[in-house]
Length: 401
Figure 1 (cartoon, rainbow, N blue to C red):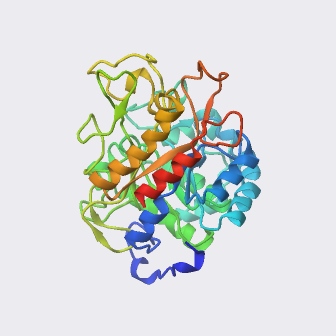
Figure 2 (cartoon, one colour):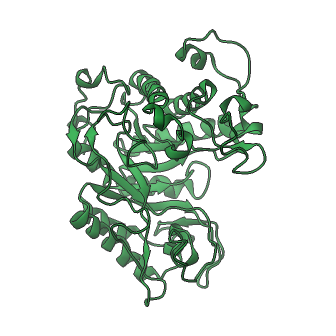
Figure 3 (spheres, rainbow, N blue to C red):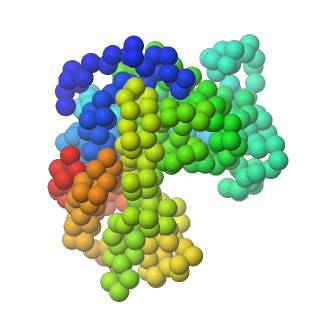
């Protein structure tokens, strides 16, 4: 779609308690989700020239996970400096592209304490600016929840704490300032563990400030927020039907096809699969929906037992891999067939859901029989380390339009 095809009329959503939304119609939002790829940290890793080609030639509409930090926050300024001209070039070639950054449920003492709190962050929360760094202890849950869960001095921040809101606002505004127009806000059920009982008011306060910043500073005056949450009590404001997120997102949860080694399908009600479960309400754009649009992906985390059927107690690692490594370790023909199958299944069975396929993402199982060991999956058909999925992705995208 040409950038002039949509006129953003902000008046109807300006006074929302969760901040000014983009006022996109449902059809436009689904269109923007329909050619989505996870492009993990593409400005830092891989063949950047080929990535720019893929984003443009394949008319990718949404590049997920383009920038983030999972610890190592001290490197953020250099990453932003590197990313800004590359994102600008991506937008020059593909003006419709939405670049997503991520603000995850992980903070480290080393990283936070290395970053100065900018004056704009104090001012956004009505505070007088002072010269200090971010305070790691100030973001922690007071009773010790999730302390050191990711390693020593690496924890989940508590959104109820002012320092946590200041930290997330800082991350969000930094990403928006270099070209991001979408933010994945991590695992909200962890960050908002106790905010949910308060009606998600602290989360809404943060989101309102982020959206207000985007209105004035983002490339097209909006930012789309999502999270790995799709049901109450984490998706509505103050126990009303006002939705916090612009769309919902979650793992795709491939289900092992027992008796057919290494094959998987998509199914309702399999472990915590989100299909037909995305809560509805009043969207940030002002329209009502019975079911909020949902974006699913092949998630990555850990590979506890690669190549083996999982026990009933662990249904989230298909055939012992994480979702992405399971996919990467299948034959090229099976991968091609599976992405089309997944898109067609969603179109038929969960029509407001779109699949964000993987374009570039880190693998947990890096060992392959038919290729050198590598740490990332790449969908590219033009580079030696690519898995050659571009033609199949075109078929899959066509199936879910």
